[in-house]
Image (cartoon, rainbow, N blue to C red; front, side, top):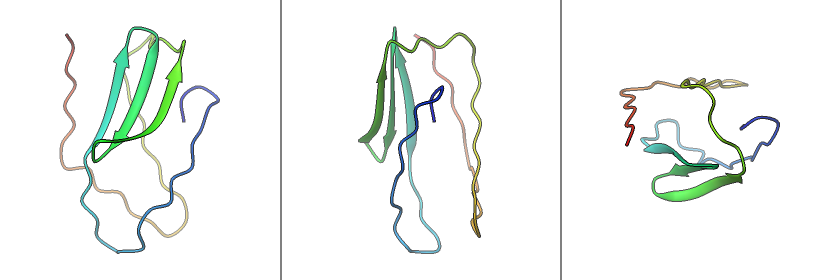
Length: 72
């Protein structure tokens, strides 16, 4: 979810899945990728702050191994 814009994603039913998530802010466009596949692209949505939040619902567990923030 970015602002009030959200995109549902159908995940595989496997219990343990390793994925690489990437959030890219390029000026006024935010793009979200899962394993190099673009899932969500929002234009005219500049980031005014640095932060990220993750949540799950239902009977799910999310384990984050590493988060890297890169600013160019």
